[in-house]
Length: 61
Image 1 (tube, one colour):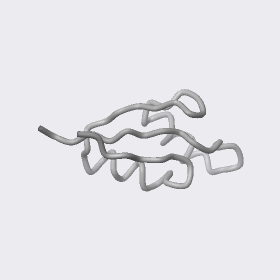
Image 2 (cartoon, helix red, strand yellow; image 1 turned 60 degrees about the vertical axis):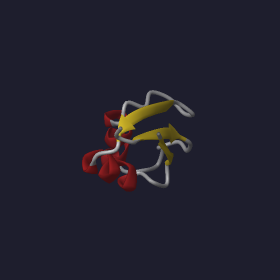
Image 3 (cartoon, one colour; image 1 turned 135 degrees about the vertical axis):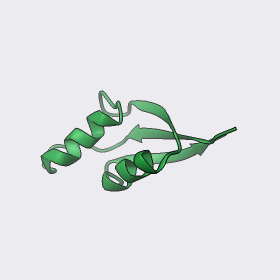
């Protein structure tokens, strides 16, 4: 079974670059403290790394 990542938006994107705001939206996060689950793929890992200062990431089985 493939592992999943649980991504939670924890810090506001106000004052950060527009591409980081678009990355938050591309992850499917709608509002602060919203949580989504994604398959653990290199693309998702790259997006979470780009906004690691705005989100928390947990591995889920």
